[in-house]
Image (cartoon, rainbow, N blue to C red; front, top):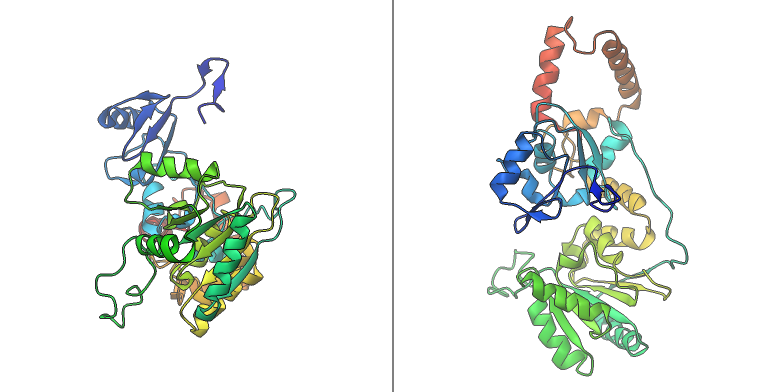
Length: 371
């Protein structure tokens, strides 16, 4: 953004950066308190940041636009907080490769406009996706080794970093026996692919260490990278053609689609293997949806169909709908209500002639976030 808003050598706007580790204004380092004070006074035009922007002390003087990238990584409460950090109700641009069920339901029935990019970049090949049960594990390993020996690279994703300390004891805990990065690193390095160069990556590593490993992977000095979900977004390695996901049933469809998006970015045919130990009907239905859908929006529609739209007045982003969300399925009623609301707001935008309705709208804004 600093490059976009630069005219010759002069910045057109004051742009701030706020994360848990870094605070800057127009590339210069600042103390957190200084930035927050400038923000309250309206001296920063654009603020870019992570979840650090949702903190209680972050206040805008005149917030007019909120842009959420990777929207599915924020909860309803978090998105609500971002949109209530000033007295104004800001415009909202919400971006994601796979909308969560609640958001998708609102684009269909509610008050969200939809802009859809459904075209793939040129020369991209369709990623072949397969569900792998325990009996198919050895064959999948052989295929991955063949791909690497032909010059390609592979990702292996695990749901957790450390193996469970209570393995086998908590039979009802679905996370007890899932694969862990550190454990798989030892197994794959020593037993399965002893001749290949393997590395691991996870969130407990220091930033410099993670950057060093990713640099080596991009430079083809690492054949297989075993990781947690930290590689879900922002990773571009065109030579990587295999995405192997352990415990695929433990991830949501949005995450699985993001993982799959880390491969197929070059000219070579790519493959996504969904490893699962489960055979439940709903789980298979979800994973099969990933096979049949390559488009993120199409996959989101399947997710909505399988999991339900969640709450409009609450914070669940999927599941059996509350009465308010269910009523949105009455398209005739939605259209009539929307038309009536438009006519009313054209005549009386502030609803001064309708104090009871004005109060209801004000109260509703405290409990319902339409995104």
